[in-house]
Image 1 (cartoon, rainbow, N blue to C red):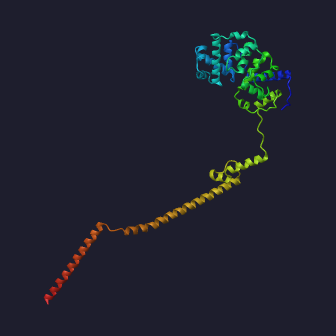
Image 2: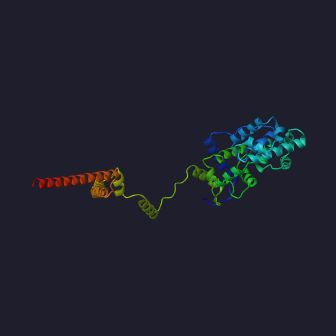
Image 3: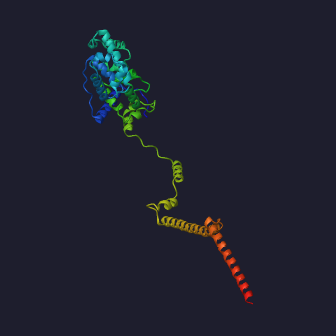
Amino acid sequence: MSATKAPKASEKTQICNKLVKDLQSTYKVKCPDFSEPVLETILFAICLEDNSWEMAEAGYRKLLRSYFDLNEIRVTSIFELEQALAPLRAADWKGLRIRALLRHVYESTYEFQFEKLRKLTQDQFVRALRKISELSTFVRDFSLQQILGSHIICFDQTTLRTAQWLGLVPVDANADAASEFLKAGVRKADAAAFSFALRQLAMDPKFTDRFAEEIDAELSIFDVMDRLKELRNPAPRPAKSSAARAASDKSKAEKTPTAEKKATAKGAPAGTDSKKSAAAKAVSGKSAAKKSVAKQTAAKGVAERKSAGKPEVKKAAAKKPATKKATVKKAAAGKSAAKQASTKKAAKKSNTSSRRAAR
């Protein structure tokens, strides 16, 4: 960072001109010509606060299309105005300010005309706007710049934060102090173009996160172009030390499987040497042999269990009680055997008796 010193008016002018030229060549958008009545200018300023010019224009046109006239907007609820102003930032606050403005104008003039403010001096203009509740500093400054052509740099919260981040204005400066700080470096004719160019940068979605970062209190206006370069080309992250690299390599090695496990599960990876692939194949062959031996042993055990189980089945079948049919057969066989025995005995007796009679 450069040493902090009070910049001269010529140095501010040189730095601000460089910044505006750079932003204009980057975004290739010129400050639009704005020419609206006083009341419509204040309404547009409310829509523009903390939004891009394009979004504010779209929101303002959408608001006017959504209602018949300004009087209908005046009597509309804040919720309905918020819906009409979406997707503008802080649409609820914008709806509140728009309704407060229209009510003040209508109650003071009984019409929606505020052109009398063009004839006032800057101080009278400011006092007239202070009577309207809820209007912000940005709405006041934008109205002064566009209606009276006052030499003012308009800052809302978004553009002020961007200017502080660049070092364009002091970190602790509010909108009024920032405008006074840059007034000597920006010509009156260039004030509107400067504010527009700064808004283009502030609303760039690529840099919104960077502008939200903490700001170094030692920044000065001499650092603006360096900060802009750093914003577009952020410095690479610092390289890790040898100890940090060793620790990260160790943690990666613990988390990832070994080469042998990978070779066994998926085959040797591409790019390994012949020794590693041969070792992986040997390991896979051993595991396959072990699996085949285990299968054979299991098959033998199953066969032995089957052969041992067969006689037990026969014995168990032999011990089963006889059925009714077998019992009947046995009884019939017993009776036939008894009859045969009795018949033989009778035959023997008759033979014996006949022999005796013959003698």
